[in-house]
Length: 105
Image 1 (tube, one colour):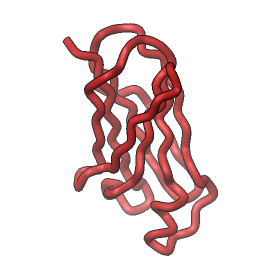
Image 2 (cartoon, rainbow, N blue to C red):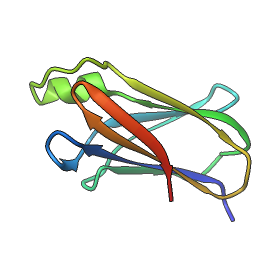
Image 3 (cartoon, rainbow, N blue to C red):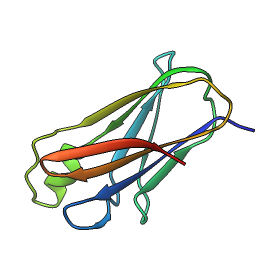
C-alpha cells in the first residue's frame, strides 16, 4: 500500500463543494506539495509521503475573496501525524466564520 493524503472541502454555508480552493501539504522535511480542489471539492497527494508530522494549509481567505464573501479565517492549518503506510483523509467543513475538520476514510 502507498501512503496517501486526500481532503474533501465542503462549503457548509452553501451546502456545496469548495471548488478551486488552494491546498498546500507540508511534509516533515519542510518541502511542500500544492494543488486545488476539483469540481467535487477534493484533492489528493499520493507520492513522496512518509511517516511524521504533515500539515495541510487551506487558503480560505483568497477563496472567499474570489467569491466576494467575507471570512474571519485567512487560512486554515491542520497538522496530523502519519504513522502507517495507508490512506489518510482529512476533511474540512467550511463556512465564513467557522470550520470543522476530522479524519475521514
